Amino acid sequence: MEQRTKAQRLRREATSAERLLWQHLSARKVAGTRFNRQVPIGPYICDFVARSVGLVVEVDGGQHEWQSDKDATRTRYLEGLGYTVIRFWNHDVTERTAGVVQRIETALTALPSPDPSRKREGSR
Image (cartoon, rainbow, N blue to C red; front, side, top):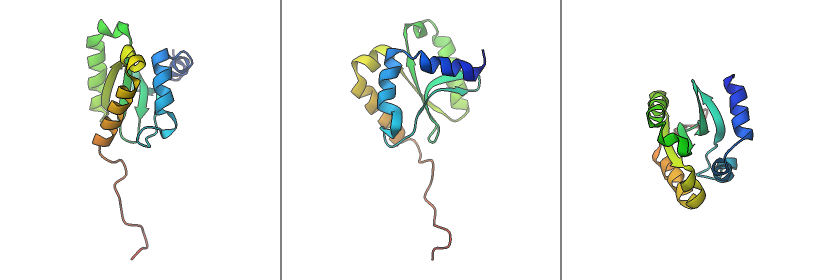
C-alpha cells in the first residue's frame, strides 16, 4: 500500500488515544507549534510531527511491547534525519493527558528555535 494512502487510512482509523492527543495538539495549541498527524517519513508513518522543530510524537499500543527492536530501529532512523522522538503509551495518553501534553510542551521548548531572528532587510 502506498505511504500516502496508508497515512490517510491511519488518520481515519485513529485510536482513541491518538484522537484525544490530536485534540490537544491541533491548531497550534501547544507552544504555538503546528503538528501534522500520520506523516510519512521515509519508510515510516509517524503519529504526530512538528516539522518546524523536528519533533516526532509516537503513541504506542500494547503491540509495541513485543516490537521494541523495530521501534528502536525506527527511532534511530528518525533521529538520523535530525528528528527528536518521544513516545507515550496509549494508557498514559488517556489516563494522564495533561502530563503527556506538558511533556510535549517541555520537549518543544528544549528544541532550538527553527527561525533564528535576523535583521530586517532595508532597516538601518
